[in-house]
Length: 156
Image (cartoon, rainbow, N blue to C red; front, side, top):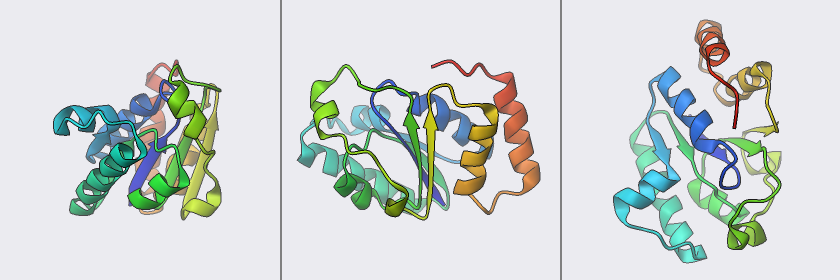
């Protein structure tokens, strides 16, 4: 299953997605890294669509992956087509007004598994996020992830 960790710039997407990717040994497709790699710094809707299509294609190559991308509209999330969304609702506004203006709050109707994490999520909320998003993981894997998260700082 492919997991989208989304939210406004500065919400902590890369922080959480990198820990998920490291723990489960799955590829991470980070929005900024993808823009660097492919030279796509176009933040228009068309530029964002291109980025989502690129990440979608990369996600189809792997059995499981995690992407950390702003993904501000329903249409962009539809293009990406991931079955699990973790929405980091940790900040009210980003420093990028153009992104703030087009950002549409995601809902559970957009995917099979939806989790919203607000400011300062607890370790239990992070555990629930992964257990809801990836039913294939065993309880042992989830417990190992909890142990790893407990050893990490939960500051954004």
